[in-house]
Length: 369
Image (cartoon, rainbow, N blue to C red; front, top):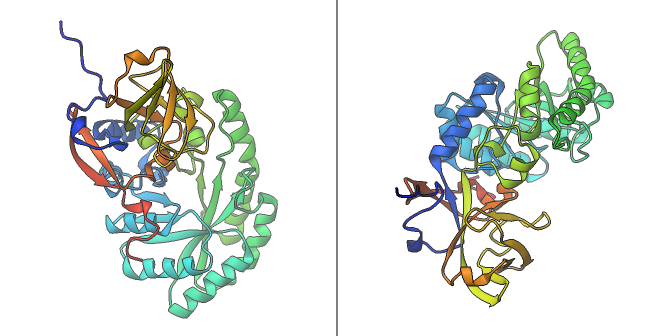
């Protein structure tokens, strides 16, 4: 009986240079379906920073997801280009970014744009520039729940809301509360931390609703806590990594049902020692912000990355005689999001063949604006 071919192998890989980003569309669709099995589409606002591809976002639109988050103006424009109805720029715009956001609003009227605010000065700048152009935008107050990256602590958010409320051209639509620092391996510990962190957020939400006499939208969480928020209800969940998944989250979030749908194809270029091989997956080709191992090889699971430089990755192996120059390896990156951003296109693997490509269009800082 013939052995079944591994799902990740591309029979015609030798026709394509390495390193390369490989995408498996059927697995992407499976991951989207599995997300929708746990959360209703109207309670989802996926972050597109992971995929940066219009075609992947179109698959989510086709599945009934219609609200999205973006980290950059380019990602927001990519979504508007495929007529995504609702796009949040999950970033407080400053300087020229405000002008670019205004141009987005003007160029793509079919898309409802919103953004984050966490400081009165930023809110005033946004209000002044929008007012001068005769434009309006919905904003979300960004909360700092312990990530200490952006946002105002919940205890000071009501005061910020009261300062923002009189400003023209901007209206507070709700709260944005990203808890990306809560990613414990133990699901129960993660859940307890998440729910405790959100207690003041829910109190704040009720206070704002009492003042405004209207419902405030709560946008919460990323991949580590998305199912916790989905189960709690009453908030929009914002996972991003789920579409491709990666080695890091597959280990940290073992209970989540997603499967690897994006790999890095690399080749052996040298065999410098009996226990070493070198591949062409340098730190310009795989996200390198984490300690080693930054990549796990499906067809060489005993290979451990050691030395990493711009165009080279040296792997320690039990026996380098098992490898040969030109041999193709298929790697799961530890962190897929910044790894995708290192490639201008992704090759599609269907039925064990490279069958076209998608442009990683939003890896660029600008598309047209």
